[in-house]
Length: 322
Image (cartoon, rainbow, N blue to C red):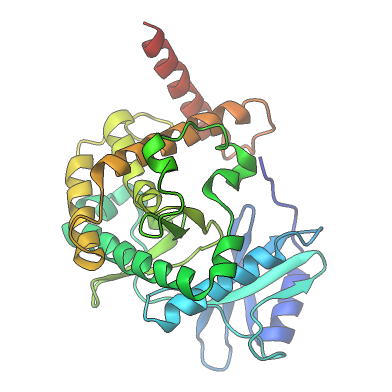
């Protein structure tokens, strides 16, 4: 488990004030990255500050490439949370200070849709908008790879994330054959879930943020990341409690995602057979992650979830044996 080191809020306040001219407020999330709210006191505009403890400075190139990708996509019209240039250096979006790497992002339009309210899954317009955003992004991702091959090739591959827990997943021969196919494989967001986007009612569109899981992989992996939650809720109920979720209809969700995606990426661009293989890889990832976590120190807030996933692994294995 990658456990984040403590972060000095005084250091964060000083660095952000000196380099971006913003006042840092409360920490709203502390995990591998620490996320703070910040404000421009002259006009009241809100911003997000991402702080990553990185004593060995191993992630500088990764973050540089990530922010380059985001700016490229935004420049072509994709709705994303863009990084804020520092006031101290033109075209600079990252600061290194006291073993920390800091970046600041503009707040996006729209609002979050709480996971437990399930609108992200049951509202046809929202789901189609999710598919549409993915179709737009994947079109631009292909262009990004053509325009910036060196940057795209530096991006981590899907099975190297999370300390390589996915490296032993058995990949279907059909997918092995398309690794070099630019229509199938490219740069992904990697973590498109309702906590990483806002929905703008007026525009009927998503604004996406949190790109620190961006990676190389099959485009259907991005879609599988979205579809895994409805599939899991339908099959297992709510995580930890197992409470049934009768409104979870994975077939309907995938149909709506497909409608939105193909409106941008073209008819037939969402390969359902490939998608279901990617869903199996995603499920295998959670199982492997939970099994490994049993042998590591798990943060207290994650332990109930890990124990729940591990129990599902055991049940699946017993079912397979029987």
